[in-house]
Amino acid sequence: TIATFNIYFGMLMFLTGGVSIYDLPDWLVTPVILFEHQAANGSWSEITLPSLIMVGCVLATWLLITRTTTGRQIIAFGDNPEGARRFGINIAAMQFIAFGWLGLMSGIAGLVQAHYVQEVVPNALYGRELDVLAAVVLGGARLGGGRGTVLGCVLGVLLISVTQNGLN
Image 1 (tube, rainbow, N blue to C red):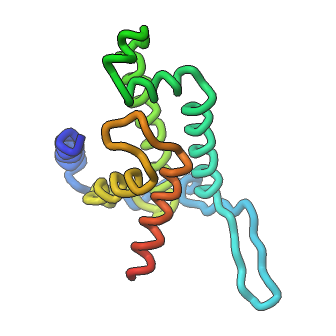
Image 2: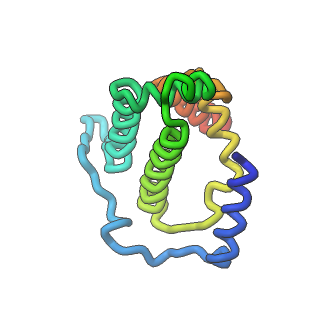
């Protein structure tokens, strides 16, 4: 929840003193270009490592949710926890798996953020949690859980990003 986020954010700021880290190892800040193309008119495009990581994370999450029994159990738990419990689904295990997956994806996102901006700032994305909620809801997910798709989430994030960049 947002209250728990604020507790952990307060602990982060207390433990780090709010100090940013700018001296990162070369392996983290060196840009990795997977594909580069230059057109005849002088314009160029490239695909970098963060794009590949995003596609991998989206694909892995889609596979987890749609192609495994654990993913189906997570969806059932999100839709109706009491019904899932009565059906024999271990609620504590599903919460552990769901939050563990969230922690893994958050860790990967933190590394990608550090790679992209080439620094670690404790309060870099503070205040953006409502953007995430808006993107997921616009993508078709229900705040109560049990509804939504990975593709809808990606489309919601794209809509929020395009809107914010377009308004600039």
